[in-house]
Image 1 (cartoon, helix red, strand yellow):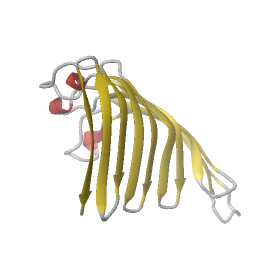
Image 2 (image 1 turned 45 degrees about the vertical axis):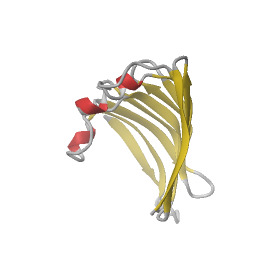
Image 3 (image 1 turned 90 degrees about the vertical axis):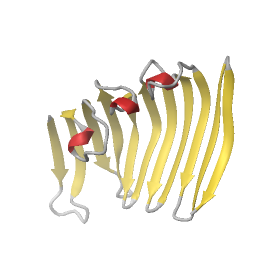
Length: 171
């Protein structure tokens, strides 16, 4: 890969920018429990007036496949990443799913809190786990988690049926 990290010597926050491209990343190399990936990442992030590191990020995964084959069923992802202390946000996110599906939305993480809201088109569950039948679901997924509770909302529909509901679990 190639990249640059820009520092400003006399600034209170010396880091000014992170730009680069990395290829051949395998998530399993970082943790043996993670799926195998053939990923490339491109980032163009800079420190804003508010001190947060923010900008565009893109990921491609040439090795997309079903989870039960130790793969990640996401072919591509891109969006606007913002890192501000312990707060991480991915907004204007777009995901290319294995089998031609698409998803878009936002993800926020801060400390023990996480929140995701994603709109989905043409989700083929057989691409996520090979024992499932082919589908073309469209709809929305929302997930929220904190140290005290987890909540999930699902509303996915296709011609043959729907999966919809809410689940809240106190921790």
